[in-house]
Length: 246
Length: 90
Image 1 (cartoon, rainbow over the protein chains, first blue to last red):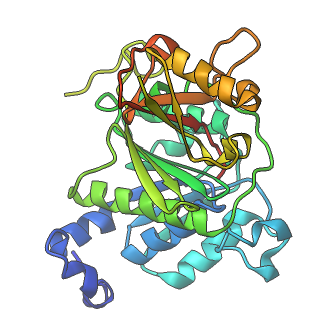
Image 2 (cartoon, each protein chain N blue to C red; image 1 turned 30 degrees about the horizontal axis):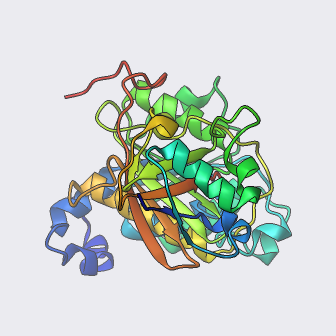
């Protein structure tokens, strides 16, 4: 049930026919796990908080560095040296006190991943490396939790929505690996992709629109083009090949 | 047989800045070989030393993944290839 304050706060989005009060209540009940509070995690956490998702958990083990500030807009000059999870939580609570924000200052590993994601309806990928993405993708499939992928490099970004057993997973699409590296990026790129991921999460929770299912969306900011590639669930996929959901 | 290859931003310095290159071939592999003949600098960015696609390179034909056929996949006149590279920044 929405309070009087919530009805006023979310008035403009409740006006969207596809959302309405019912959709807003679904958002209020939703629990979202955001892996990373960097370039992607900042905009998507801000917009999911503003939209009134009931509970958001941000996980990040890093501390804020000066070189993060060109893109990681949840972290400010005064936060350099602070833990990112705490810095993010402080801002998110100020954006919307109605949302329950939880911060976890841990590295996501194969030993804690299942415990971390256990109580969430949605997992959002805002990581900065492939191995952790693969780990989250695998855990999402095993626990049947939708996984919202995003990645950036320079002016390029990509996004894809994974529904375990129903769609291609990250491993169906990416078979290779690249080492964790210092990558070039300008803040507007994760802003675009993080907002696309947040849009996908909102649509999924409310149950509206067409998700990026089996569709890898690649954004080229230099040419200002969005290109959509069809991808398929790989029956031989080591992660999801055995999983079938109706 | 004329196929268009869309060149990833990160590889365009190897194609004199061209975003699109016309190539000939009946398979993805032949098309990429023609691309390499035109722009030899692209070879180590797409193929390993044994001539296999690097594992962070994906080829799409008419916006659909060429996996698992990849280099053996047939192409026809007017088809368009995209070379994409896995990215992992966040």
